[in-house]
Amino acid sequence: MMKFYKPVLLLVLSAGLLSSCSKSDYSIPATPAQAAYQNDLRDDFNSDTHNWSYTNTTNNSSIYISDGYLFYTYHPSTTVPGNIQQGISTSISSSANFRLETSITSDNVMGLFFGANDTAKGFSFKVDMVNGRYALYNEGDTTHAPLPIYGWTTSNRINVNGFDTLRLEQVGDVWNGYINSTQIFYTTARPLLGDSVGFIIAPGTNGQADYLDIKW
Image (cartoon, rainbow, N blue to C red; front, side):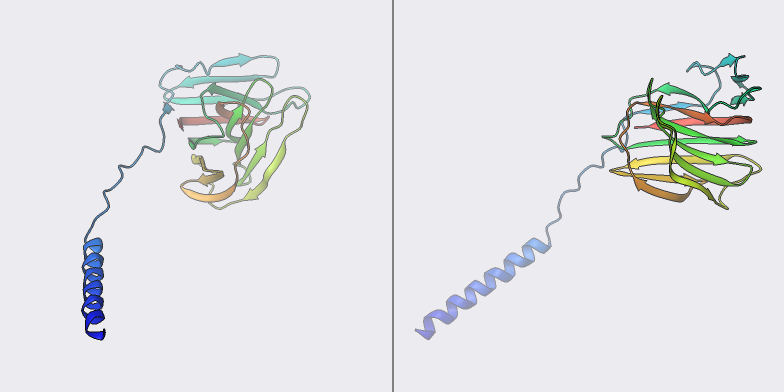
């Protein structure tokens, strides 16, 4: 009996070794890389394509385009009102990745806002260029005051004497925030009630934006 089983055992082991070699030489076909975003809306402010410009004499604010820049002024002369927001409609949503980027400078507080609609003010990624600080806020709505997600935090990545590049990305269920290509925060993504994206300005601010790039 032993003479019968040994050759069979050797045959089985040899077949297993050959099968193993065959599998190790097989290359799995590469899956073509899928584009991260399907849409790209970029405004370099060479013209007022997206109707940014306006003047409001009631709160002494204005927005205008000149020499490839978007300029903001906001100097209310009476009781200090809230921030002003001016944006454009997109189709970003909580269910897909998106990437927002701009280059801005100001003499006070300015930043990006996103996810707003007619009643909800969305979220903001702001920079205080006087004190070298940043913050991430839920800006509330018509009945709820703004609340910080990340309160004002000092960062040496902020260039208080020139332009700063702000970028916010949703990747899966996480928001990542960057200033001048350095990541400075991450947090769980919040639901967006709207798809408007644009700029937020605090009272007493003169600001400029070089471009706005929205990918989703």
